[in-house]
Image (cartoon, rainbow, N blue to C red; front, side, top):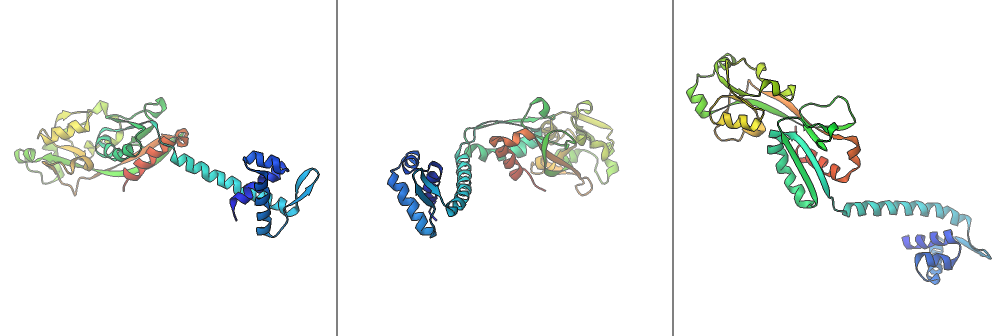
Length: 289
């Protein structure tokens, strides 16, 4: 069935007169008459009766009117969706994440998004602390702890593994490590105790009690560089340290710490196209198991 036939039918059903219906559609009144006649022939029923007051719907016409309105509504919805899909995504989205994950994982996957949507601006807050969504420090946060309350959308991005790493130079100049007990005699690199921003980062005591910590930093990047220089051993995320030339995992089968990254966004932002775009992109390319 031709939608145009139904469109002209609905115009005449609404206005009751050919001239008025024609004016509303900006066509000649003979076009309305021809289209309605074609629709009646196609359906094999009479849809209108003509009277002094204009065109009146028959019983079949009344039934068709309800159906045609539903079709019109669906077509309108489709047009709106297509129109919205054609609109360019623009505006600012601010993402807060931990320093290492933001630098190594999140920043590279945002590259393609920027190419596809040149009017989209992304602020990446890759910080050695957690951002505060309630204070509007960021629109989307990636954290080590899942929130237990609040008006947020939450999804698990991925689990990740941390291992103990040391440089070749460090291992060659310090006592050999054959078991966990030997770790207490080694020199370590770690976080500053009173500035650890998440309990999930307090993992050194779970594997050993070192006699000496030579270097502490709130920055995981700084810890990695200090480890690479041979200053000491450190627990580092595999996604940062695994492919760094000169770093060697120590007792990798025995020392394995699992943590998780969670992505969080206020419920109200779900209605904003640019927020959904960035959220879905990070979930697709930044998540794994």
